[in-house]
Amino acid sequence: MPLDQLGNIVSNQMPLMPGVDLIRLTEITSSYFLSSVRVGAFLLSSPLFGARYVLLPVRILITMTLAIVIFSKIPEGSGIDVTSIDLPYLFVIILKEIAIGLAGGLILTIWFSAASLAGEKIATSCGLGYAMQVDPSSGTSSPVISQILSLFLIVIFISVNGHLIVLRIIIDSYDIIPMGSNFNFQAMIVAGISAAGSMFLAATIIMLPIAGLTLMINIAIGVVTRSAPTLNLFSFGFPITMIGAFVILYLSTNSLAFSFSDLIDEAIDAFQTYLGDITNG
Image (tube, rainbow, N blue to C red):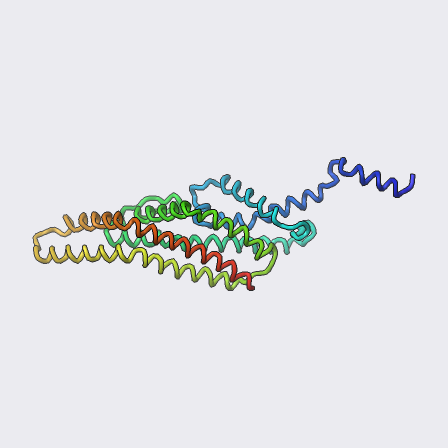
């Protein structure tokens, strides 16, 4: 039998032979798991998906599902051949993917921490700083008002489909920052520092009206105490301050909702700006 005819028979029978495409399967599987590193790091540090009340199997399931979408967007032959590169270089690629996703999630988390910081300062100014409870999202103790404002922000974030927007952004980041490409690490640090400064500014804007009204209530109580020295400040001052804080929070619910909506928009814009800045590296 001629050799070319034998080669044709072998090539025709190769798809029927188990184990022939094992190397190709290994390449696909390795590339698929490499595609999930960035989005997995992002979900680990993002405000909603990185909370402790989100179970680890659920987080892994979301990561693997998004990795399917990401892996399907990679053109044939343009991905990273994991089996043909050196192990140190593969380790560097994994570190880059973790850094991009982790920093993006931390930027959103820092922005969202403005609500928690504002609630903590409001609770301190109205005498509710001692009313603390374990925060289910972080596992640490924080004032109840701080947790209420944080949950309020998360509810608004979900209601405006912010979680879908940030997932869409992190998926599109593979188009502007392909796997294994270099990025501007200094811009990443600058974005984190800028997010921290914006967090304090946003927290001040949120808590300043309520803290100002609480200060006016305390001034009024001080005037009453000065005019009637026999009155006990602790007997009627603290209850009035706490009741006044609850009334102010109730009346400012709509304003807080609009403020949190603007905060979410600013956080998403900062996340997009971060991805654009590190691309210019």
